[in-house]
Length: 342
Image (cartoon, rainbow, N blue to C red; front, side):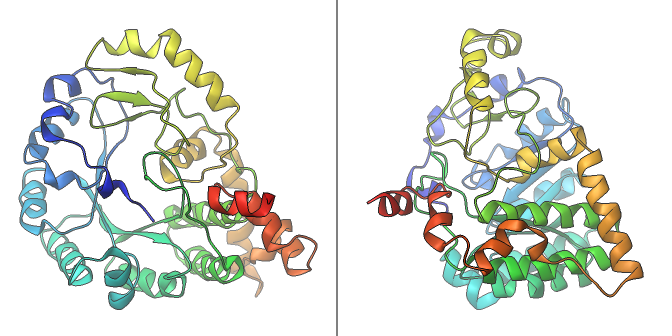
């Protein structure tokens, strides 16, 4: 799934507070890893980031409960997303952490008891856990927590090239169920999350993104070494510059940054991750808004809910017009592409 742990950074080489101070004004920052709470100076990092960022969310496996609670006490407005990959048995098998589900789940409950509002689950949906998707959402909904989803991606950063969904129909069917649950809610935020999950069905079938990707133009990713990139989803590492070596304006307006932007415009990976999709949904709001209006009205006034077969590719696959091998060729799984081309 994600093998970042196989290529850990060295503490002495990681980005410093002084470099973080060079970052520009941001409306949203996601602090991710690896595991962010391994850094003992994370509170200092968050303190600096709040000087330039309106909202911060930390993605974590939830293992360092004491550190998470301590940070939340200092920054009660911070968002926390704990990666939980299904119900207890499924999660512990996938993540390989003994008692991982209970540690993450109990950490979330403690945060809610403290009055934290911006907390919740983060689930990467795949063949092994798709059947747990709606069950886990129901738990989060009952506890009034956020529920973030993703699917398998391959990239240099994830240290993985063989991720792929094998049973697309099963996974898509579970996304369909989740989408209908979200549309039935009274929360506009959840209606737009339904659109995001609709895009995940489109993604696992290898189709072009529903919205343009503007990574490197108005959004960026910075790694532990200070390298600034458009995102962490590219096949190879695409560096716009290193913030340890220059100012932000020098980096953002450099020749290297323009070279990377030209590559982004030609990128064919069709990623659908919240880091690139959320800003696109805000920028091109009329596209998801129209989808939301149509599907919310349908859920209210008719018995016909959302169907994965609204996507032509899903109908074509069901009818045998395209095959699994055809779809595998459209994925970023290098092993599958090589196999199909033999």
